[in-house]
Image (cartoon, rainbow, N blue to C red):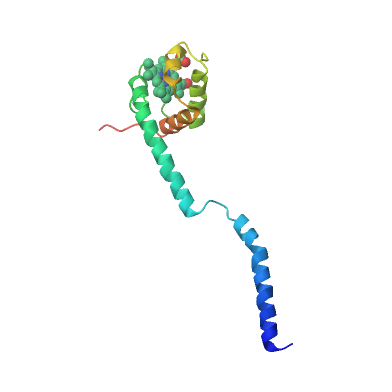
Length: 130
Ligand code: HEC
C-alpha cells in the first residue's frame, strides 16, 4: 500500500468514526441551546407581563401585593397551590364560604392564563415601608 492510499483510508476511517459519533453528541446535549433558552425566557416574560395586567382586577380584592382584603392573602402561596384553587373556581367548586365571588373572576380565563396568573402571584413579595 503506498503512502497516499493509506492517508485516504485513514481519512475515510476518521470520517466514519465522526459520523457514527455525531448522534451520540447531539443526543447528549442536556438542555436547549442558549438561543432557544433565551427565546423561552422572553416568552415567559411576555406571559408574566400579561398576567401582571390581568392581576390588576384581582388586586381590588386581594391587594396590590397579594396581601389580602375582601379576598384572602395570596402572598407566600406556591404556584401549584394557586393554580389548583383557580382551577377549582373555574369548575365552580365550593372551597370556602365566598367561592361564588371567585367563579365569575376566572370563567373567561384559559388554563394557560391561570397557570401564568398563579406563577405571577407566587412571585409577589411584600414591600417594606419605612
Ligand atoms: C370580588 C373580589 C375578588 C376578586 C376580584 C378576585 N378574588 Fe380571588 N378570592 C376572593 C374571595 C372572597 C376568595 C375566597 C373564596 C372562597 O371562600 O372560596 C378568593 C379566593 C382566591 C384564591 C384562593 C385563596 C386560598 O387561600 O385558597 C385565589 C388563588 C384567588 N382568589 C385568586 C384570584 C385571582 C388570580 C383573581 C383575579 C383573576 C381574583 N382572585 C379575583 C375574592 C376575589
